[in-house]
Amino acid sequence: MSSPAGDVPERRGRVERGTKETSVLVEVNLDGTGQVEVSTGVGFYDHMLNQLGKHGLFDLTVKTEGDLHIDSHHTIEDTSIALGAAFREALGDKSGIRRFGSASCPLDEALAQVTVDLSGRPYLVHTEPAGMAPMIGPDYDTTMTRHILESFVAQAAICLHVHVPYGRNAHHIVEAQFKALARALREASEFDPRASGVPSTKGVL
Image (cartoon, rainbow, N blue to C red; front, top):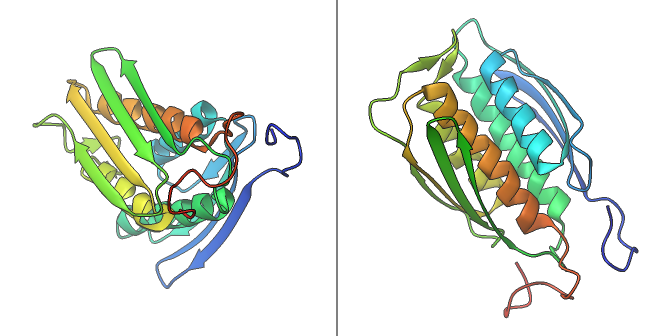
């Protein structure tokens, strides 16, 4: 996909991040078709990143090797940091985009509502139903969902509101959030055929 004028190349970001705890490579193409290749060693997190690429129509490559002998925290955290940085790089100066996006996605009994502003200012509001199961599968701590979003928002420099008003099954509650996030990011990052320039009265985002 390109701009309405057809003169803008695909928007891509690539970030490599290495620490004593993890080695991460993230590549994203905002104008893709939802082709995803993900390997973090954390099965449920891989599943969520697949949702992000598929429903956002982002081509996404994620390759992470982490200290899973300790737990999955560093692997998930550092991947989310790199993902946010790659997303910000791919957005460029944000000229011609819609900037704002929102989506509501149900998954059986759970509903997730997401609104995003590609504002250049990181801010997160996140609510989930109380009493969620503490784990999904053997290695995904459900308290990590908020931390994933915090890490992503901080590096992508976006304002993100995620609200799950109801749901019972932890898998459904988390997956609905990633699907709604994907759809909201897709809308916000798409080109607006009626717009030109950066969508801000300040002239910069």
